[in-house]
Length: 591
Image 1 (cartoon, rainbow, N blue to C red):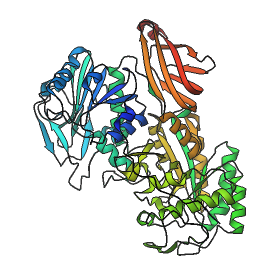
Image 2: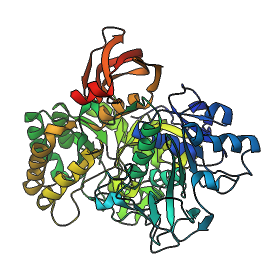
Image 3: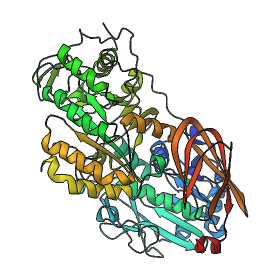
């Protein structure tokens, strides 16, 4: 039976910062002052929000850029006197300086504050309603964001800035300045009193530990707000900045309808959901449990009859994905396994809600993938979701080893973000993997029943559409009625502004987008956006300055559509140059 090949977990190979060292001076320069910091999570965050950047440890190279971000600390212990002097000159020369944890080096006055005061008690940030960079955070959950557990010790390593020279962009819950800004006319200086990379790593690694205000089914944009702020600073400081949009085809929201098929009746009911989706041109992802053992959870349904029904379902132009073998609540406690697990000898036994015997992480992944691919005729099963979102820390490298590419194993709220993100080996900060996480936005197990939560779900979709969020819907097809009614109503309400697709469709698009390099060269009347697109990407969308008017592309067969500040590439791969005429301010205003 199978699978017959042995699975081996890849060795941990730390990601060097030099992997992100390439690019032109149009990019955001990240001056890395301590290589032991959470720079990798910061890199993944910047990629998620679409800001082109490069990392350097050379302050002279960083000084060539219009926007310089110093991370993780500004200190005389980490920077030479020459480097500090050069950084102090950045805003005076009309450029933008962003400092994280500005603790020393004599730059207090450059950033406009008295002292940096350490605290381990801060747990919340409130943004200014009047500053142009934060005035767009109009929702209460955007204007006030959690950064620590208010019932615990707060966030370790935060700083406040005393005696700010101007109104802070953000303050902590006690009114102390958290993010400050000092203007030098065309030059700007910003100081952040929190470690954004560490906070990103906290969310991305599912270690939020009570920061989130709710578990699921709600708006929790902590990381998105901070990344949008950095994007805004970059676009404000970099003349002719170009960033990558987060949704294919110039749409406002990426929606993935997903179903967890982990119950006998769900196999039968799935056909009704698939009928609706097929009739509306919506491809959905079905996470199917390969249940061939009777245990505490349920009877066997991955048997001859069940497989016949699932084969019919798989022929409906859906994505077949893995939902494990055992669907254990304690999957997060499973050992890794030896990589020799096979069907039918692999027999995990769910005893009760807290005990499962003879299970392993690799067994759940490799055996379920083997059965789905061979019995349902699927060539490549690429997506995985564990039962009950039980998520072991070794899952990313196990997914790599077993040939998966995409995960939907956490909630957006617990991740503190409504954008996809790249996973690290062991969910630590040392090494990245090629696995991407697409967190669950709405699920159907909380009360009130899903069918009664449609207005709230639509409202959340509109909030996320303001900045191109990702919306993963999880529906168990164990019943029809209100759940199918919810799906019908939701699709109808959001389809005009949303992109719909399967998890692997969006995952492959996101993976391709993640590799795109963006550089801008030129001046005066014309600018060229140079794109490096290693993998084919359909519907790549750029956000360009308002005075950019598209003129031509190289190669000429790249189809490009411009709608104001959005530029859509219908399909592209390789090196692509987009040439724009820079319109005058008067011409832009007359349109």
